[in-house]
Image 1 (cartoon, one colour):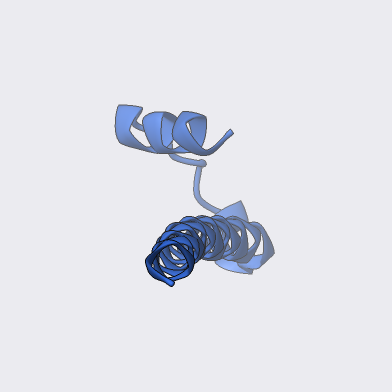
Image 2 (cartoon, one colour):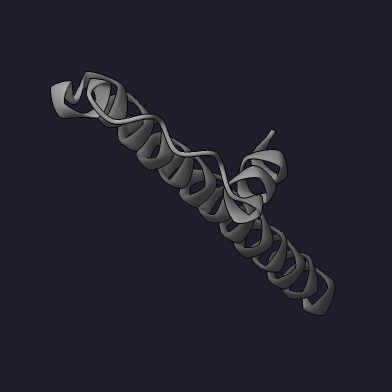
Length: 68
């Protein structure tokens, strides 16, 4: 009886770990989607065509490298 309960506890712990990993993955894709939306938004903005495009800063480059 105790071994069955121990197995169930181990399974629950494993499921909780997998759940946390999936939550992190979903959050990563939410962030990427937001970045992509912002990038497309800048490309669709007509007023940005009149201004020279800004050079990417080191932070933006680092963030993009972290996700790819």
